[in-house]
Amino acid sequence: MILRDYQNDIVTKGKSILKKFGIVYLAMEVRTGKTATALTIANDYKRVLFITKKKAIQSIQDDFNALNYNYELVVINNESLHKIEGKFDLIISDEHHRNGTFPKPNLSAKFIKKNFSHLPMIFLSGTPSPESYSQLFHQFWVSDKSPFANYKNFYSWAKDFVNVKEKNFGYIVKDYSDAKFSDVNACVSKYFIKFTQNEAGFSTKVNENVLICTLKQSTYNIIDKLKRDLVVIGKDEEIIADTKVKLMQKIHQLSSGTIIFESGNAKVIDDSKAQFIKETFKGKKIAIFYKFQQELNAIKSVFNDCLTTELNVFNETDKHIALQIVSGREGISLKNADVLVYYNIDFSALSYWQSRDRLTTMERKTNDIYWIFSDKGIERQIYKQVIAKKDYTLNHFIKTEL
Image 1: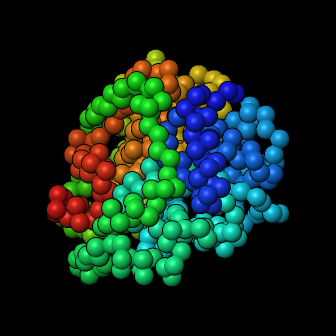
Image 2: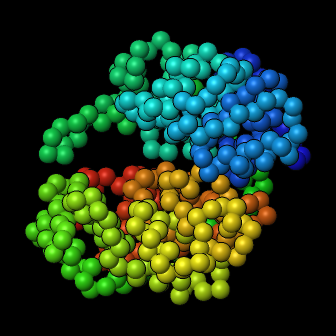
């Protein structure tokens, strides 16, 4: 593997920032080569820990082998960090925005801070703060070199950096999402190297299409009854939506033909979307993103042996692939697919912006993406929110559905 000129320039800048500040944040858009860039910056160290998603581990190891560097690299997913042994000289945290939960840090952020906060760190993400600049606090908090190190916790930081508001969901909660961009940016900008696909020479056009699928009338009957009565009682199972949150979740599930019952059991009640996808994209190699586990079962039942959930099988055969949106939205390439198809849509704007670029390569000129929405479902309302880089929330659901 030979780095492109822009990657070599970023390596030089990155090494300088890392040496000076102890942190460098590579905010490089997907497919611009941030993994190889980070691995090259790390070439000055002896033992490096690379934290990523499970599905991306093999790809990162392949890049490292292709670069032929001599330092020791340990690649692990965030959920397995507790298994790590030995000492390291440098931490690389991939898709680092995942450590940006607020107002409380997540388990991964806590572990990194507790065990590695004294080490130099490289952060990687194409979307450092997709929903709020408040997401940056805990991302830097994991390091002793954080520009916010003098703040005890997020709440004390928020007093200076966030316009704290209140939201009413039938009860009052504090909303910490309105961070003061100029104030936050003044503190963190020196750590960032930002690089876009346009700067890298990409000319990929994303063709985004919404296709409408009609579900079985029995599915719509269940949705209508649930909205009206907040309960549907069957022979063996019940669907109960006794809170607005549960009603939103149940309608979301039913809109793609699956349901999780009150007992915890789950079932495919309508495979119309899977049938629609198979017929519409006949003759094409398809990558399918689904949200709920039962949606995968619906897809499997329709595609049978023509489907895999393993990336290496997808790349080496003519089989289609189905991936869960959150686990598949980052760190992998689906460039071998002819089309990217969404069985359902996630509430998260991050899922939208990350997952839609899985087809992108420098050589590919067009990405064909298709959203399959039921004609009377909730998906279009969610879509309108997330394309505006906003999460779909309970508050929005109440306004549009009730």
